[in-house]
Image (cartoon, rainbow over the protein chains, first blue to last red):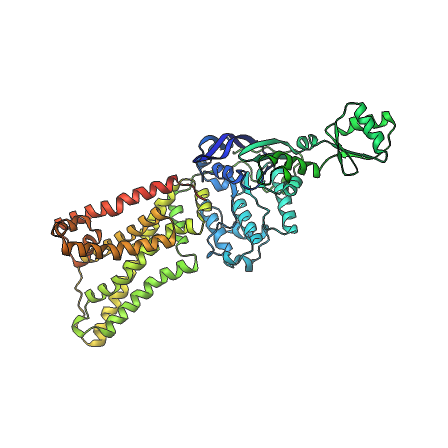
Length: 298
Length: 272
């Protein structure tokens, strides 16, 4: 379990992370979502002791990261796949981690296989790696100690679609077996398909958090009927506020309620569903509109 | 966290996560071992180390080829080998520290061991092991050269360096490495620290000598403030008590104090 409490990090007058509190639970994938520069990476660096916090704390299983006796066996960390000595081979980088953690040598080959790096690729120097290969190597370094907690900053960057699928399955397995997974992304779709819980951050502040289901719930309902005017009348008559969205309407009321209203008014519906997918995207844009660079125009 | 929340529907045979485990701390010896390995495991690191032996061999060869018969003594070989060592060893020390920042591998290093003081200590230990070993190897190559050279030229083999001198020479080079290490933690950038070393080792002494030549007041002060001046005495044989005092004072000013400042910066700075 990762617990972040009232964490603040200032750089001079600039507040990169502003009093954030959240918990990543075992058995769940927690998505840390926010536009670039929102403070995701700073928060993660504070978690693993690379950046000292200005105020507040981050603990892993109740302990500060620095108090863990052998961090690699308890927390798998991947902050930046490109932050490796370009002159080392992939195998050598993994070997250094294996040695530092005091693991059996055989683990290196196991991990290379696990992340699908061939022996030939593992023997190449990292300067010749694609970003996708670096991500795989970084994942291998994070997993080699079989930790119960994973902290991954933008792990899907540079992976091809098959790689993203692979990463998703791997993290799902990890969480299903009781592991705690925290991964950040600025891409909504990535997080949406894998995360159980979401923490959305913008300009250093948490703007929304909860289970994905809850957050989707608040995204509302999409409803469509051939007789648009009738539907609009029925909704208005029941005091449901709505906005036009494509061929239909969007409302904060839940689908069941909207369905009953339409039924009572005798309006045949052609579409009625929770506004998923696009809903989360709207939510994300809306939540970050005040804080993102593009402003509300996005 | 050492307890796991197990889900009843999880197939135990498919577990990839271990059961709750007992975790011991990382012993210092292991960190030193890994840091030592990191000094050799890149192509540039490997060739830097190899260049120590290569330079010692070339210097030895040059003495055999060009020195007059009477100069074929161990002292000549030692002096010839010493020149490349004073350049190479500090660079070894610098890169062992700065690569963590310049190559950004520190992100992993300082996460696996979130106590930077332990990493710095391990790096220092690894650097000194490499330094002393390199000097012994270099002096060994010189000794072989001395035997070979005197045999080729048909003169008596002259061993005119005492054990004390050998120790002094090793000390001089270890001090040089500490200078490199100090610049490494202080500057934390490979190119910057290497340039810093050349300024420290070649520009400062020249300025100091010029000043001593023109200003009488500085002449008496120089031994107490010029580190290179004091360090160079180590190559000339036994130091007097006053010279040891000079070495101690200048080392404190030029090596120890900035080293402490640099270590403090390393401990507190943000690793990006």
